[in-house]
Image (cartoon, rainbow, N blue to C red; front, side):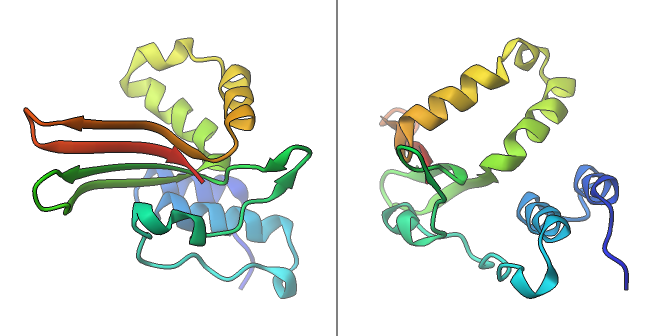
Length: 143
């Protein structure tokens, strides 16, 4: 079976037939030989307390580069997750382009500025908010 092209993978992603994680894996397989291909990502996402164990980040000049953008919304009382979003950093630009079709204010984002901030930030918590009125805990972080 031949490998799918980048365009085929992106079309599958935009049609909702594969997840962003699956698309990232397929895209990385295109550029690496099959014998050196990394194992597929785990099915279940790690909890925020263990997000450092998820996948090793690549080393840059000043330390590890973030490989995942993660968002968690949980119930303050039970601690149970309400929303979990995991986006590979290398897919964010593509996601922002798609998102701009539904939310025009995204068009004003400067991708170079955003990636520069992520490189400076490295990994860790970006936002940690507890809203007692709506009983939610929101965490946004890079790892």
